[in-house]
Length: 183
Image (cartoon, rainbow, N blue to C red; front, side):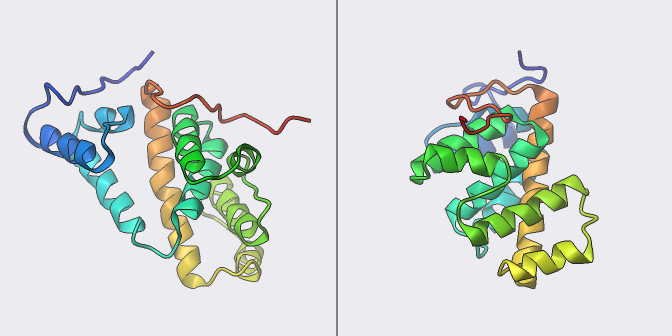
């Protein structure tokens, strides 16, 4: 059961209504996460700002979703696991690869290197070692990609933590963060 109110877009007012209307216009739906954020419009506006900016970065949608799955798995966020699993399926990522990404890995060697780095950033709260940076470079990440990866981690930690605090009602097909590949 949700611990924070999910603002109904039909009864929202002021800036919250404007922002939620913008979400609906862009996505066609208003995810429950954004309804929780609308309790404080500045939070929703910040989220929309960082995600909008990062969507213009160098990572394609599949890579962004892979990072989101990896961070959700590391932080035990079932809402984000479910949402990003759903989006990944819409991008034609197969179910086994979604689960790998949720567990911080990939069959693709370059993406696996990126997700390994992302996992180290999450595990160490950003206190990565020189060896972690070198491994990221060896995996093909330049300084721009490393910086972009950290920004994606920060954006996803934000949503993971908010959903974990709020117990946001999951409005996507459920994918638990602890899911592993069948033996």
